Figure (cartoon, rainbow, N blue to C red):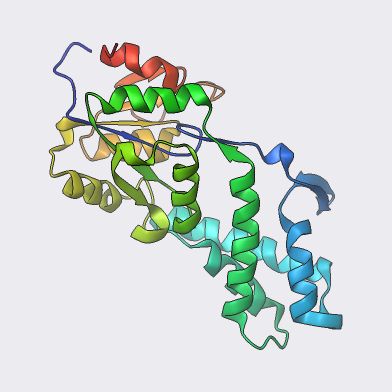
Length: 252
């Protein structure tokens, strides 16, 4: 880096510090396509709660409709809709007699998130990078993730949690990258100016465009991402993955 280095380095979580492996989830057919999904593990809870009225096809229709609705809300306003809310909306859309829709939504959330956590891990070399960076920089995590409890459990699973001074997860913030409010919250917790922070992430719009719009220098992780979108302001730096960050920063 030609200019003075940052005082803090903040990482995205998924596909930055940790990798998740959806191919390890069970497969099922949804709308004519074989997909890896947690839904087979949710069926027993749905059958117990809905009894003879449960129809998997109807649940899949409602779930797919809610997913489309949530993606539209996220795209339009960069708000976060939690996993619990996703399942609550799905249960309500089924329009069936459920004693406690919120309780069922929470059971489905915990089952789904346990599955997500089970196929998510930090490569050992990524965790080693965090330990090296922590000797020189203040560290943080800023993640778009719709369940804060599981997000924090996944960070703890990496063994690097004590290295991070600030952890912000969109499910707690109510907004998600690239919304400027979540970056402002990060700067406020660090009590640093934008130029004193370096953000590291893998997505063009959420990570790169979001950070740059707030004046925060950003490193884009390009591995398996193809060409950087021409319509998005280019990142300050580009490296393949987290293992190249120490060299970029001049960390031994």
